[in-house]
Image 1 (cartoon, rainbow, N blue to C red):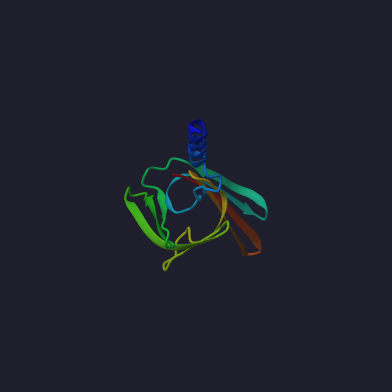
Image 2 (tube, rainbow, N blue to C red; image 1 turned 90 degrees about the horizontal axis):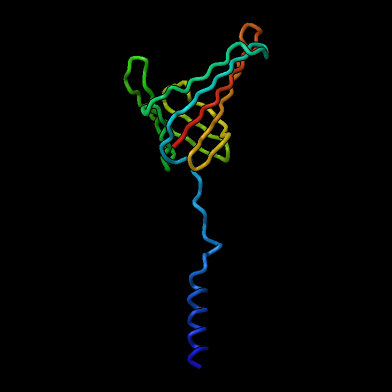
Length: 146
C-alpha cells in the first residue's frame, strides 16, 4: 500500500512538471528601438535603372523607436554632425506600415514590411511620378536591427 502511495505521488509530481504545450509564444512586434543598418535605393526612369546606391555606415544615433501607442520617432545624424529627432505617428495593419506626421518628411508614407523577426525589421517603400512624359519610379529598402 505504501509503495502504491509513493508511485501515485511521483506520478502526480511528474504530471505537474510537464511543460504546457498551450503556453503562448512571445509575440513578435514592431514596438521598441530599431537601429538603422542599411538603406538601399534604386531609381528608374522609364523602367531603366539609372541609380542604385546603398549605405550601411550608420551610427548608434540612427534609429527608430515605435511605441505601443502608435507614436514614434526617428533619430538621425545630420550632415552638420547634430542629432535630429523627428516625431511621428504610425499604424501597422498586417505588413503595411504607415508613417504620418504634421510636417512633411522624406520618410512619411506607406511602407511594406518584408521581414519582421525578434531582431530584424526590413521595410520597402515605392514611389512613382510622371514628369514631362517620363515615368520615374523609386524603390527603397531599409534594414533595421535591435
